[in-house]
Image 1: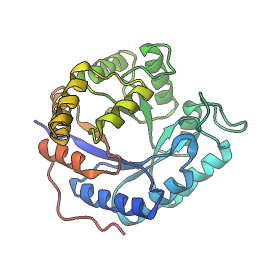
Image 2: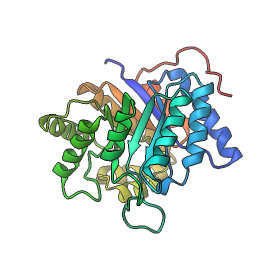
Image 3: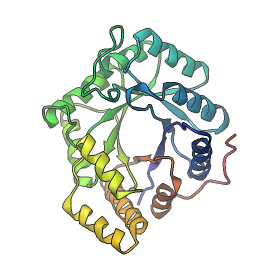
Length: 288
């Protein structure tokens, strides 16, 4: 089996304790030699400054290629592009450009009066600004706001045509869902890489709620398996097994890049990577 390239997603810390947890997570996963790591925004842009601080710190100290999330929520076009310029000045070369989730209490996205209307406009502005690595989101399961699967694919193509260079998908639980989506994207003329997003299941209860919110299909067999595993105190063992099998099936179908949503908890992600044959490259990086 050909080993895939991997990448990891982190979220910015809100407390001193969370800062140490992020540091420990980076130290645990950096030796696996990720292609890049990304740092998220909170819903409604609530962690904008925390994200900037985390991105700049990781870029300066970790030796990793750091991708900064950037959204359209609750900011003018000028303010958003100022943030992008600050990232560039700090040596960041990769942006993950997203529309973003609405703030708490809002049912849907409402563009800022002087802001970007959607992710396509943001991608286009970043491309015009000279960004050569712009990643965007994609949805193997139908996005809750999309009319149908084709609408999701058409929207992704618009983002690619606007200047995006790669898509990172929402997580999913069965390989067929991603593979069908990949094939449909190819038929639509999308040639940019589409990297599957992988979520090792740290908590089945939390993951199930998250899946319900973002429209991810939860197969009955998976729910039944975790119900039994939790009764038998084998949750983590099942989580590693299920995630490793999913990744192996994708690799067998020609997938050569995997993007892991770590939730700032490295153990399951690391165990899955080791099970796939991805070995640490040397010692820990120096993460200040």
